[in-house]
Length: 84
Image 1 (cartoon, one colour):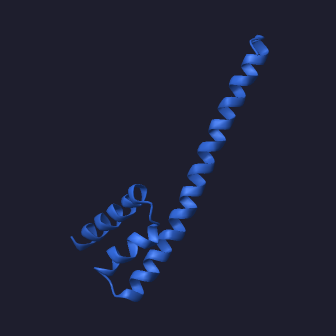
Image 2: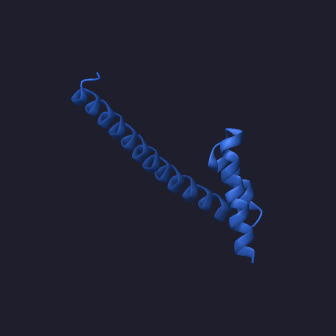
Image 3: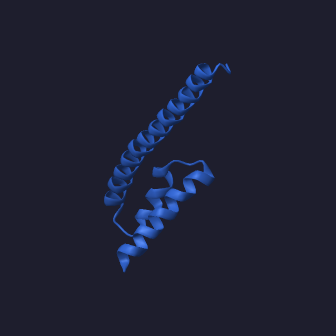
């Protein structure tokens, strides 16, 4: 049960980063400090921020690649059809 509460609080803190403009570590550290000793909370917030940044970069870059590829296909089809 406590794992569910901790995960829920961590997810809410990470969700607030989109609304508040603060970084993940800024909001996640106080949330984790409620459940763990400060040293462990700092280490967990650091690990979460590093993993989150890598996942966000890969998701974002993959999305950009797909968008660019789609636009290139549309432009190529337009050139072949003589529309551009």
